[in-house]
Length: 171
Ligand SMILES: [Zn+2]
Figure 1 (spheres, helix red, strand yellow):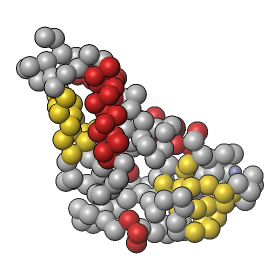
Figure 2 (cartoon, protein in one colour):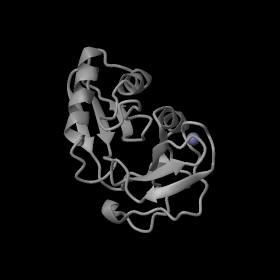
Figure 3 (tube, helix red, strand yellow):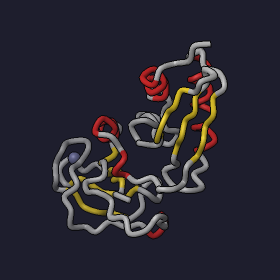
């Protein structure tokens, strides 16, 4: 049995969207850490959840299996790796573009990681960084709330187009 190449595996995985932000794939988010074709024609996929205990992880695993099975893959092993913890630094440039197109401002800074795990519920942004409005690009934006649609996002409002938007907090 001939398995899929590395490249084909990555291409398949880039069709798996994030359950919370369907506009962005798990590859764009940096959730997929490694892919390895195995000698038996199967493959081993290593993923790191965006935060530990992420309930979407089972959905992601299932979606990975479905996409790879549809691509003719058998013996799919999906491993979850919790350390090192996922960071917004792993979001690709293409991923940041897709976030913007989806109306979410991507992290404007690198994560200031102090230790392995972070408490998402205590994650806050310091309101001294210019965050560009994903709708109109204006930097006349203002922090409204430390928490947006999810704990890992903050809520901002644009002073030009007046639209509120989520900002993905660097972490
Ligand atoms: Zn705007």
